[in-house]
Length: 154
Image (cartoon, rainbow, N blue to C red; front, side):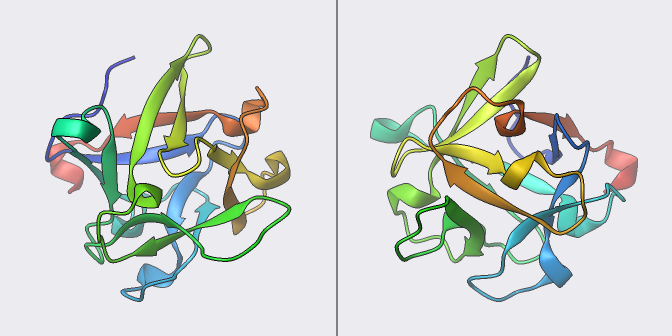
């Protein structure tokens, strides 16, 4: 499994549902949920991995080209996982993500802020399923594939 290249747009696909991470309604707003939805190649399903350097080498900001905002975790107390949202990048640890290869041809996408991984809630194959940060439990619903868009598709 190859790590993402700088400047290339990717789709992030759940290995369980085959659905893509999707920026709801092509939103430009901070706090917009990132859900899963049937892959359609739309720009709201494109993600750019921006590598971090120095003390944060090995981590990425994962950014939408629609909004120029990155993955972040919703603030608050959550007993059932923390919702994944987009926010303006301000350098917090909840906006830094590491790709951890798994033997089953996927990645865990791990947050530096709490060491939790992205989790497809309930392993659902329904459109609009929330994506959460949740402790790594080895579940298949926590594995993701990263697929490059061809230049013609961008």
